[in-house]
Image 1: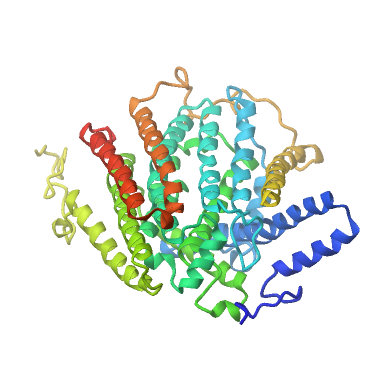
Image 2 (image 1 turned 90 degrees about the vertical axis):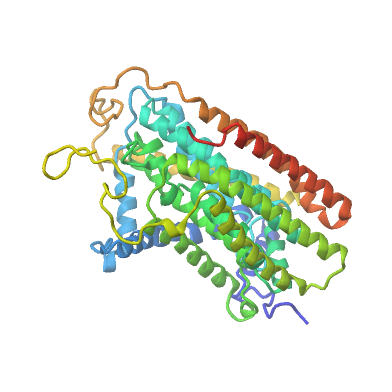
Length: 421
Length: 124
């Protein structure tokens, strides 16, 4: 019995990989090998980046995000340019293109121009290993998870290049904060990924998806702790709002982007969204079953399922951004080192024990459902217990509004102009 | 397998040309009368510090805490790198390998406890 109803014919739109394969076969007959090899890479770039990522950036990242955050904050969001404001991202892009990009005289010119270029390149490279469908993956390398983690940490370097090159105090402060925060959140993120690798015993992304398909369970149920750690760590590495101390405009003007303008700023802004989409795609692939949906992928095009899941995951990022206030840097650093790192280590120990039991006791594959139940309970217990151990007391939280003086705060002058304690 | 890595190598070149093209296009627009050509201006090209004159050098000294956060990161990240091969061959190593891995994680935990006791994890 074939695993999919998907045929190998080029016109089967449920798997567009066949179409590009057919095109390349035709070209292979006409052209020498080296040319076809380069054309294959170009085709992959067009398919993954120009057709999927750029429109997603414009219409989900710029328009959808502004519109949704507008609704969350009881505003309209963009509604002037085109029907429902749909042409707003295009207007923004044209505006950024024709604006003059200033370079301060005291800045390091070479580094300042290099930073946006080096910032954009890894985002394009990240989509090379993401599987959009059964054979719709640009480069199915066996170490895709390590590749993704490695390439996605290059932007940290770029951030510091940008902050340093401006010769501006705000930029430098912003860059230093971002580097300190990002490397702190990198550790729990990698440890969480280790738990996933322990279960699937592979570093490839396509094989991770196939493992979930074979076991008929998504890794988010088997690894709820790792998923929570991934989500928090990713939103910290992306500088999304609960953790956007890099661009805390009330403290340090615009962080490392203070001196950037025009297209140099536009590349940073656009690719921040690109990285968020890449993180969403990676999270979907590893934790939410990628292009599979419990058998539905036989009827619906798998790439459509994948894109739908990616947008839903991206909606989680928008949601947290619209509802949560910004945290202070000391809170963030303490959270990374004292909360997430021990939790990630605990998760690793639990997963290793379960996996060893599974292998050594020759248990049936359906034991994963028992593991899922155990892990969900353990995750809830670990998060609640560890936060109580660190001093979290929800019952002490006041239920109604209080005056500052009732809460024990300092009031310099009261309403009648007399000093109080 | 190298076939796939070669594709990524070509993609690196494409990925570098793509933003370079955007920057060059934006710069070249001043020659086609979209906007006037850039003229140097002392005030406009000055460092932005909310309208005030810049005081002192901009590349200032930093608190030591940034340095030890980086040190802690390097220590723990190298240890995590050693755990990846362990996770990959986990099915073949049996209970002995399992307990050796746990011992390694235990050493990692001891390191965190030591840093915690030395108050290195606090952002002071």
